Image: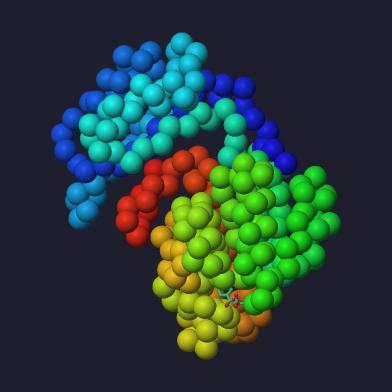
Length: 291
Ligand SMILES: Nc1nc2c(c(=O)[nH]1)N[C@@H](CN(C=O)c1ccc(C(=O)N[C@@H](CCC(=O)O)C(=O)O)cc1)CN2
């Protein structure tokens, strides 16, 4: 399923970069774009003084038609001279995404609907689940559904099948929309920076299982959700977005779960939108968000 596209995004690109900070980085990038016949639509930058790294995102249009490949070739020397980690992508096609779910479908349903109405600039290539509960929901959005059961003894084959699907669909992003299986270290490495999870607590509080019951037992007055990149360390990946909601003493754990559904959907949708628009840059174990 594809988000409705806007005619204007034909010859527009996004450059993201990070590099050791020094004078002249913005000058070099903007001069390159000017000399290449490009026009800056939006530019954001940030210097992280604690890590000494500079971060930049530039959205630009090409006055004379060109391609991402040609632009990458002509920018490479500048990237090398500043020791940049950089990416340059056309905005013509929405990012292809695989959504994963287990037994709770509220985030899946929310992402499918937001994509259908054009509020999320992605193309959902497939829905994957270790259960069959949401096969009909995926079909109602004309999205292929893949049932990949997981048991302790079949996790390796299940993950191999998932990786084949990611490669076959050309998906750039995997979203764990309440997918309740721990991803192996190998798959985390293979898809580093390309898996986003929604954890149903305001991390670092209440890691692991049953966070709403943990929150109830602690007597919190705010509950939250955290969208983060998935790493081998459970619930420890770089945080992209968080959301909270005020709760009262009278709410049961089950009622906290109900309040949490909307909070999870909001945090995850914003994280997926920002990632798909290439607004999230990694700064070590943290993120820089050019929203
Ligand atoms: N490598 C990672 N994998 C996953 C992460 C992560 O941060 N790193 N987040 C989880 C989601 N999650 C919490 O947000 C979570 C999901 C599942 C479990 C868990 O212990 N699962 C059990 C099986 C449970 C079941 O079968 O229902 C397990 O895998 O043995 C903990 C945290 C997604 N994956």
